[in-house]
Length: 82
Length: 82
Image (tube, rainbow over all chains, first blue to last red; front, side):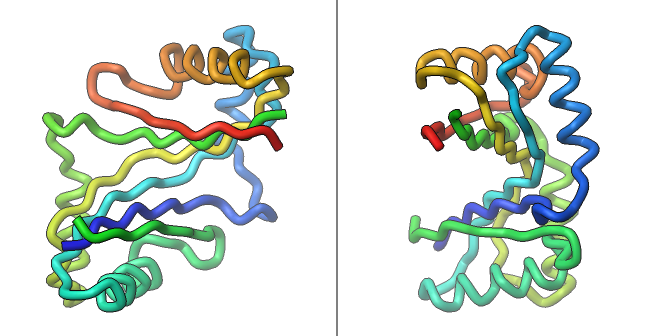
């Protein structure tokens, strides 16, 4: 069994209105030192595979086919046997 | 300047219908080896503070006051000077 931790965030070139809205909210709570904030998605995925390579292949396909919008988002991941 | 990476996920005891829905979708795409999946939030926050301790304090307050639903979610973070 492998545990993958997947981090999906906006591409830098993409406007992040959600991040801007959160920043304004934090400033209104007197956290002026918040310079910038971006929100993305965080997945924890258990993969029932026999080796790391197969687990990574499934993860990459899952990203391409469902979990990541390739036009607007980038992703990175960590994967380990559990 | 400090960069905080914040990972917010459901508490284990909390039902995660979104994770179940994503798992079903991945199974329908023939990724049967996906055993479980949970989706959370991932933030990258730039904090204009003078030392790590102050940056962590701002981050913890931001979590308590806005970014994390303490009833349903847990969080962990990494913070480094940039």
